[in-house]
Length: 447
Image (cartoon, rainbow, N blue to C red):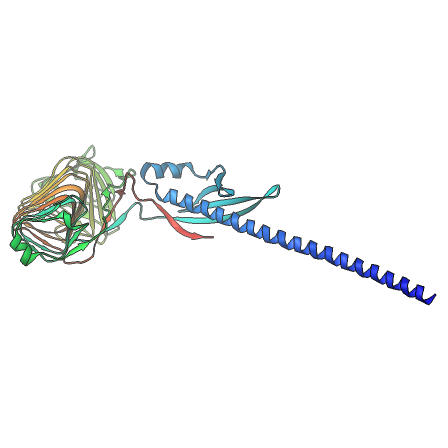
């Protein structure tokens, strides 16, 4: 009896132990399955996030390449929402929202899981460039010709170079002095006519990558300017938007931003622009300084926009002798001549096809143009010349202190180019790069 009871107890114990083991095993399987599912979901979440991030980066890259009309239309069409875009084993959708000067790119990545999806978001902020489309370019040489450079004589204090791969595109003849290196893509582009000069005077050659010097563009001209008389001189001879300065109203003063159809300065008179109360913007359809000058006084800056004719015989800003307080933007297609006694102390941005500087005529400041020809003869100038598609001819007796970028460049005997700074930087108001100008947005941060 006791043995039977013992056997029954043992059997019951075995059954109970097996039940416990079975329950524990099922629990372990359930826990393991749950952990596996958690790991799988976490993996899907990571994939979804990086898909979202890829969508945001791709969108930012697309926006950063916009410019001009495309950028304007883009801003006008905001907010934008994309259709789903397939990416790897998932997809992403992007929304673009603007707030103030910033763009918010919200990208949602989705990865399929069972019969649903795992979603994750990535948000990228792009900041507006408050400087507009301006771009700074750095000159690596005192004289740099995109397509060619020919040195027939004279002196260059600084490097010379070219972007060309054509044999002989850096052509040295005569007996010039080059106090710097030759910046070239390869040896074949260098042609030296005088073997004796090559033995005695040949500079070191530094091999470079192609440089990117975009075509400069003028900024948009201001539209919201008042028209009429300068308030400081109600007796001035200005009718129908035409201001004429002559002996009876000499020293006429403009002290506020305005638009004029024409400004004429004759009889060796002076038009004063007073920037004591702040920067002044003038837009003029035709600027005709037959004989006279524009004088800028005060601590502010003058921004002068000229739509059509740009003629100066006399001077602009030469009394102060500064170059950083006046910027001139000329949309004239006509030839600009700076000759005789004409002195311009300003940065000149021009769309003119041709610019001639001769005699004692000088531009002190940056000369930036999308035109096709610049000729400089005689005299001394302190300026940087940035004209990446222009043929530039600097004749004998001409002296330029600064750096030069052109299309094709010819330096004549007796000329002198002196680049005192190893690093020359020029700010373009806007630029055309492979058909587009720089973007007004740049990546700021993730959030």
